[in-house]
Image (cartoon, rainbow, N blue to C red; front, side, top):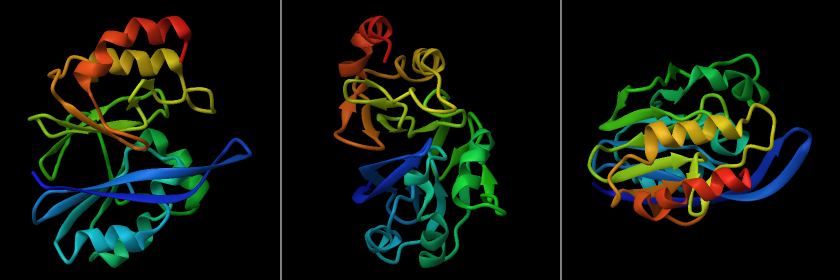
Length: 202
């Protein structure tokens, strides 16, 4: 499976604070493709698509730095539907008041050869995407070194730990994890550290 990786930069805003962030965006497939997240700037993401057919833009969660380019990106690549889990609709409305995503994600849904795994904790509607063979797009649920941040509004550390226990850490050890920020990892590298994460509380 072809995977094109784009890094875009911008500002993550939540709870009245701002952080400069670099985001990973993934263009998955040969042709057609699915785009995983729509961060900051539609132009380089559309360039990575390169004229291929886009069947879906899947947003792993509703934080502004993962969704803020979604409408412009959809327009630039032919108008595919934008997917988000409904539990993050309140976050979508912080960026795009008065509108909704085109379609809803749900656990077990298949989108363009990827299976949705609902993994709340970083946000209520956080999701990962599993290709069934050895690749996981983990959004902000799982990173190299541990779970996503749960110190902000709508987050829960206990919930993200449960999500990883039930949905992610039982996947094959060789599974490559492509996160929403930073470097790749594998399930085998991260799973042995679960108890350490629980003990430290983040």
